[in-house]
Length: 161
Image (cartoon, rainbow, N blue to C red; front, side, top):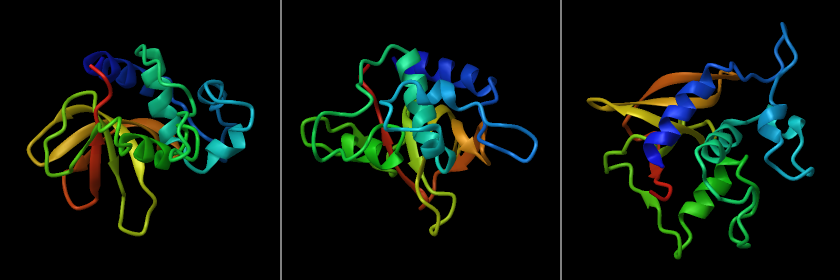
């Protein structure tokens, strides 16, 4: 699943998903369609990295429901916080510490700065002190970006193999 997820995520970034910009109306409806009607395109506008990760996981064959049926996971997987809450559930235990090296296809939870909310991206490659990620909502576009493995990396989520 992990290698397939990475390949799909890399390909999906090329679809140039984007939120509303001065030049164009956003095309996030495809990401929104995975979620219940209560999650609107407008909800995605502020942060859609979680929705992009979920979209790629579904395309890779994940059977994870859009809202995990445990009250400790408070929202749908369009929210990075829901990914984090899910990965930390005692029965799931798929969260790996930032001190561990990620694997291709892991979901990396990180911050752009200590003041910014967390984002999530799919690991495409692991380098010396950094990872290359397929991301949604990177400056309001899907993109491939390199992120350092430093104190702003909060952890890695490894979906089922």
